[in-house]
Length: 196
DNA sequence: TAAACGATGCCCT
DNA sequence: GGGCATCGTTTAC
Image (cartoon, rainbow, N blue to C red; front, top):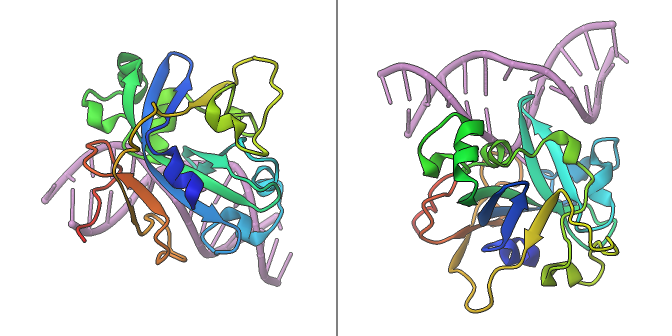
């Protein structure tokens, strides 16, 4: 999925904390690992809404996981944010996580939401403000210049970070699809890139 | 109303 | 590197 690769290197900001995306996974309603696969339910409703919206849900009864709903609208597609490289508010992240080592702060989809203070209450909120990425056709707009609770910022111009596509992790169905995208060489991944 | 499942993280080895 | 805690959502009866 193009959007999942595009998000690598972008910056997520929430409150006083920010981090660079180094790992993503794409999900689509056509494959059984996606929540949208089962169809429209109260929980998956957001997945079938307009793109550029946050889909935050609870996993294993404990963790909040952050997804970005993708275009086109109604397709039930999303990108799971799996890992960040901490950029700002690192001390606040340490406090929230109760950990010292920087590489442990955001190296997992449940970890990064805790580090950034992103909770289920941010489900169904817009992700983009006035950044170039937000001007993708069909992306959520018209926010009147008000910054959304969570904001995505396009990566600096120039060469995109070196990335690799590999198999997704943590799921039991459709594991063979190479829809996990990692920044090569990052020390903040949830798991290392397999040798290949 | 009940039961099974899961896009995880932590702690221990 | 491997096992287990934990609870909302979904689905079946």
